[in-house]
Length: 174
Image (tube, rainbow, N blue to C red; front, side, top):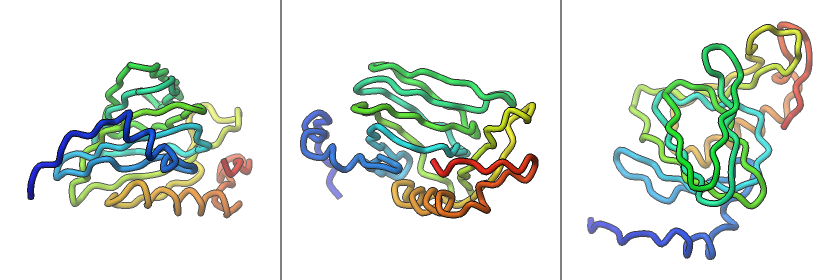
């Protein structure tokens, strides 16, 4: 198979920005044997945290974003501004918050056969002294762009999944 030509990303955006739509807002630009490169647009309306067993690299092409993470048992916000990059360590729960009219690139590893990704939601009640998981779903990633949407829609559509088993609070769907 011949090696593909380079991609002119600004030109690609003028033709394909409509592909970066909610609820996930991403499009796979490349999928090699080792890495996946995704374009991601804003705004998004997600309140889940993704946990990936491999590192993720973020680059903000246009505008800034906020990466909410759980770091050492505490919630923390990481701002990634236009032109900045950030390498997220493996197994770090994270929620990418993308604002209107922003575009970024995310590079992830192709998942090893035995790896499991997780989507999880935390209770927002102030009664908890540490992050408390309400719901978590695990799966092996083969196509993140298509696999996240049904999990997110299941969460949004089922109040029983959104009820905290510790305090009883029902989380907002998004």
